[in-house]
Amino acid sequence: MIFIDFPAPDFKIVRENGRDIIFDRYRKKNVILTPEEWVRQNFLNYLVKTLGYPASLIGIEKEIHLGELKKRCDIVVYNRNTQPWMIVECKEMNVPLTQAVLEQIVRYHMVLPTAYLVITNGVNTWCCQHMEEEQQWRFIQQLPAHL
Image (cartoon, rainbow, N blue to C red; front, side, top):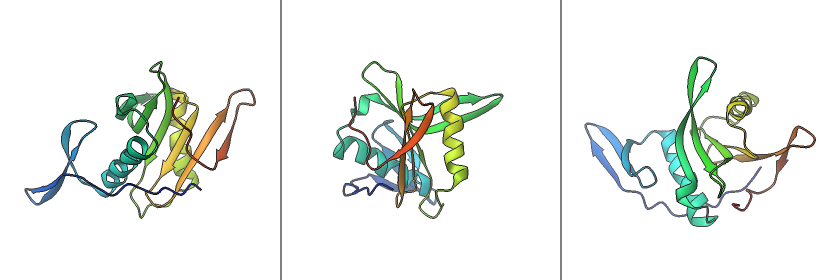
């Protein structure tokens, strides 16, 4: 498991029609503030503000197709050659990071191959690195520096 020391939240949140709305500075639009969105926004801030990942190389809710199903990757980080490099699956804080969550992101990887897979619920975070030559995954103890 990886410990994440999230930056202090500095979000713009307003209440509209009985719902909390957060301004997503990365997508440059307002979105409904769900518990999962709270985790996603905090994780994005961590990637950009703490780890220095370029915001311009991060995609949010990237649509993929699993057979006939349309799915969305919460966060996709690209390398400097704009190739998918990391997929991040965010769950709300009270959702445990189970084998099913790991299997979900591995299915995304089958469509969108990356070197790293991350699952987080804002409390716990796990990162796997794909070992291409051995065709297997290994858990690592920290998020990688961006390429």
